[in-house]
Structures are given as C-alpha cells and as structure tokens.
Length: 349
Image 1 (cartoon, rainbow, N blue to C red):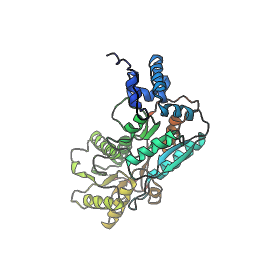
Image 2: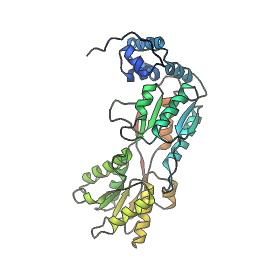
Image 3: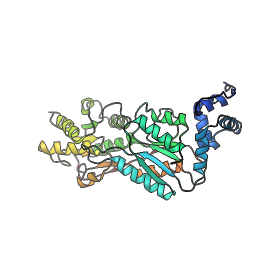
C-alpha cells in the first residue's frame, strides 16, 4: 500500500511534535525517529521528505539531537531507583556501575536523577534532552505496556532500554538478557544432578522479567520430561527475602516436597536457604537451591546463581546512544547469561 501523501504544515500554537512531523511527511513516527537517530536505515527520498518537514515545522529535538551527537563530550541520563530494605542486593546498582564504566570508555558521563513515577521520569528525560543537558537516556525496569518508550519516541528523545519494551520482532532500541535460557540452564544442571522434582520460586505474573524466567522453567522442565508432575511446584510472590522464605517453606514442608528449587532472584533464594535450615535441611545436600543475578551475596552464601553480562549490556547501550563514528545503528540485542555453580547445588540427588 502506498504511503499517504505528505500534507502541508499548518500553523501551531506550541512546539511541533514528532507526530506533527510524521503527518506532514506522510510517514510513521518510527520512520521520523529513524531519520533522527538511524538515518542510514531510511531511503534517501523518505529521509529528504522528513527532513523537509522538520525544517518547515521547526522541530527542535531533531536539531538538538544532531548537535549533541556531534559533541565529543556528552552525557547520558538514567533514573536511579530506591533500594528495597527487603532485598539482598539491587541489580540496578551494578547495572549503573557497568553503564558508567562503558560511558567513561566512550568519553561520556552518566547523569543520575530521582523521580517518583514513570510520568515524571518521561518529563525529566524530555527536558534533559531538549535543554542539551544529555544526548540520550537509558530506561530500566520495563513492564508490559510501559508508557515511557512510546512517550519518548513521540517527543523525539533518543533512548535505549535495558529490557525489551515491545513484542514487535522489528522493534529496536533495547538490550536484554535471555532470562528464559538462564533458568533453562539451571533446570538442566539440576536434572543432570539427578533431581526430578524441581520447584520454582517466581515473581507475580505480569512482570516481564519474571514471566520470562518462569517460561524458561516450564520449557526446560518439559524438555527433560519433568513437567507433568510439577505444576503445583510453581509458586509466586514478591521479590523479598520474607516472600522467598515463605514460598520455600510451603514447598519444602509438603509430603511430596521438591528436592531442588530454582529462584527467580538471589533475594528469593536467600529466603529459601533460611527456610531450608529452619526445616532441618542442609542446602546443597538435602535440597539444591539456585538463584538468579549472581549478586555479591550469592558468593558469600555459597549460592549457585545465574550471572547477567552487565558490562556487555552497558557497552552495547552506550554504543547505541553514542556511536564512535556518529552514525547510529539500531540496537536489538539479546545476550546470554552464565550459570555459576557453587555449593548450594553441586551435590547429586
């Protein structure tokens, strides 16, 4: 189907938006974003039409983004999230450290800011880019239907997400870790150790990361022929130490208790470790336990866990936002995690 013809620009009472540019050029908002951030991806004729509409409408974010990309010493911004008092350690802290190191290697600095909600975060990101304070932003902790990516796309703000924000296979602007394969590796490890009843401690449904990790458990259990008798071994709760202990105590206290537990986080796994000891079980001998995220506490607790490649995540995000040659390339990277085996799951069943 042919693209709609471009329509003449009309007078506006306020600043032009990416939607205005798209309508004037007869293209989609994604195409306008690609022209601003990934011009090589767009056909020359279409690119010229968009650029003409940008000039006619006086679309500010485009000119600001181009000016910022030509700078050799810019900044990228990311919201800093509060740490829960019920969590062992916050992955967000280590991600920010990896992002800062990657930025330093690229001659960029990381700006952190605190806000109360997604709407305030979006407004802050738009303001930081439009005032020239930063050249792009990083989004973290994406949820299904997250309003931030479409809002930033609408405003013409360059961004990259740590986590997929869309089920569209053609969507770009994200770097993620294959959470499903990480949990599948854990199930494979436990099955090789002789475990046949492997429980799962997960997050409430509707959490993208949690759903991916739960899906990895289901797929791997089915692959190893262990799923049929294990449906009641999948339990969910908030990502807190107390919740992990409660869920593990429930599973391990049953007559047909699992001999191994996979937790969707190290925080849940730490609670499970305590629950096992409270029940008189020795972790690593009477019951195998594996966490996820390989926090510093995991090593201290001798807890097997899945390690996310955060340095590589940070590097790819910074490369996408601040390309060395000034030519942005769309990023859609799914990275593989690594299972780190320690004493909590090393022994055979």
